Length: 417
Image 1: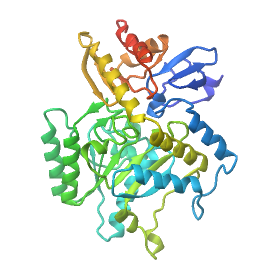
Image 2: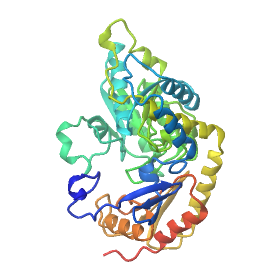
Image 3: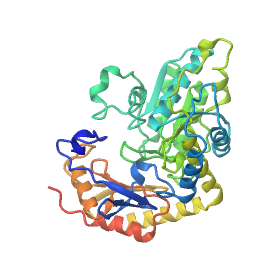
Image 4: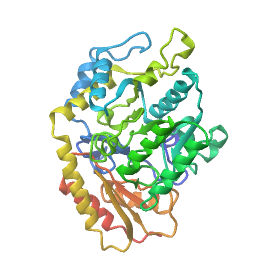
């Protein structure tokens, strides 16, 4: 009954099996209603960082819900949102100065695009061209789909999408082609903004590129006055080995998009951080220059309290040490598969590991995807391959024994028919 009523995301209900009912979660593990344990090896779609139900985060949620559950954020404010903004600016790359709250990664990026266009319009030098890195995925709203790669994800919605300038992905050995293409795009006509996923394209196939390339892309944008938007919705909160991926390139974006791990994965909250010049361009006695964006639950107090608790964990617990240990375990897991001829393009960035299964068809709709998901679930592991690309992105509390279970499941992949 419930399967016919509930419409699940990224699910083709005509062919998918009934969804697995989860009743509980703790640490790196999920538990079904019939007490079966499943290792959450993708952090429940990349959101859970320290583990499910971290005591400090759940405690903060309970404490806040007894004080204030929700209040309109236009004309009102509250302590959790203000304290969180201060901490975010403290943790963020130096130079970001203002925090705008929303409720998901898609809206964080949508806000960033609107900030960029509003900035140029308000300073009297309107620019409207957006450039984006090939293979990018930035969300499922209209603006974010427009900035993301075109394909099966958004083909049905093509009439609604606006054009962007596509910059080729900086695959190994072809980085200069990317930089040259960005330089040409900036010279052809002024760019309003260039948006990238720093260091790794997530949904595009866990494709990795170097910090020096990221740094040079930022320098090109600076030379031509284009705003640089870093979509760290997935890459932030330690996934790439540092708090934010931008740190590895020693850059400060003009606009930074955060979500997913912002609350440790406990509640939906997003934030878009901007420099002072972008904020000041929207400050005027002319009310038409207001930044017109909101959601009903902007800066929800309970979500902000959860995020504050998450940042306190980063301040008081050895999170980066855990990340380094997990990264080493991931490297060892990939190394153990080095001689397996079924796999190619083994790669890792921070705590993210990926490899491609050699199959006749590739891409998101490859038949390997559903077959692999079923295999992993039968082996008590939650992995959700991107077509024939198997990736592992577990919470930072994942142990060596946990990860052995994951790589044993990968090693035991049967012939796919």
